[in-house]
Length: 143
Image (tube, rainbow, N blue to C red; front, top):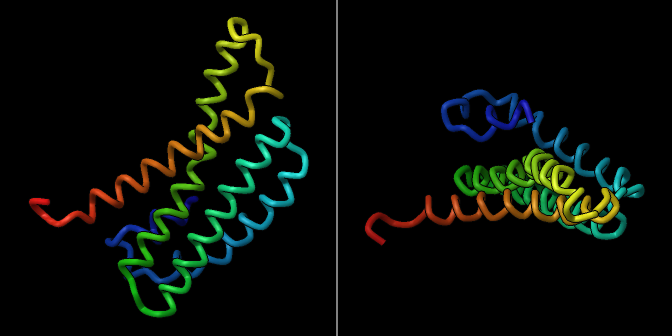
């Protein structure tokens, strides 16, 4: 995550090393996330969120790599932004879990019941924000 801003922001695009490191490190993070999902506090709901969004992350990263090889810089950046958005989903999941923990006396839900839902909410929020931002950012002026 520390390399991501240097790899996706245009003012740092002249630096080649952040992007060269981002792809292999991102792949390593993605593949280890599969292994870490074997034990999920939230059961299959949490595991399904992790597997879905981890696959989405690896797909986005792989697509960015292909576009990099083809020399399509603008599309590469967009797919890298999607990948980073998915990664930031784990940070969004934390406050969502905090809300579930804070309201557990009222809802009577324990971590086993809400961890999976919190994962789906956190990752989905980030995915929708990134996709909306990319969509509206790429609209022609006056459209």
